[in-house]
Image (cartoon, rainbow, N blue to C red; front, side, top):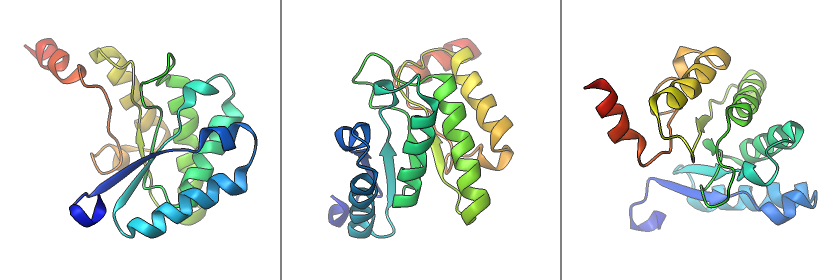
Length: 158
């Protein structure tokens, strides 16, 4: 795909390996993919719905993705019942902040799945603003994945 002009590559964190605590394998797979795509943006989807109440795991998955070379971390594919949650996004933002403080590398955040109204979208905006600051509030570092949200935002504005 990259050799055909793609600017970004999305990959789901190797979930079975992550849940079975094979963290070196998870990290290795992400690193290999990043090496293959080079300077193109890598978005790693954490699929947090599989472990959404385990904040330690959300933080760890975020860190593994970023250590592996992720330019963006995303909450979910939207294919399982629990997608984005404010709590997960908050933990992911904390991980991004810690990673940035340690490495100087900015990584983006993309909450996705179940965000279908203005109030919910604003909640995610405020999480990013509170934890990461205004400099993250650009499409380069913050996006919301919600196919139906754009039309609802427009309707709310009108």
